[in-house]
Image (cartoon, rainbow, N blue to C red):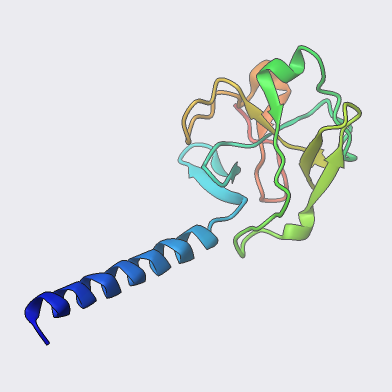
Length: 146
């Protein structure tokens, strides 16, 4: 077999294997994952690493009271299919239908939100806002203090 054909076959095989590796990596991403902050410990994030928050004034029964102006700063988080690492339990996440018809994901009954000032993964600018917005800690679902 000429050298050019061997090189082409090897290059094609490499590209196919690289494609499988990328596909496997994409399939292993979680819709909800954990991140860690040195001072705040572990907290929930979405698949791209943005922090998830809960609103202490929500009743904790899967109902959100964040509407109107509140939604300008706190966008509801929703994932249709929840996949989580082994350290979390997917059954702790439920789908909530808000009174405005939007779907939202809740953790142990608490609707989850993004904060509009978190512009890159790892930002935690919503932690402790007005003493009512907090990161979601998976350890016994405790409030992480500001």
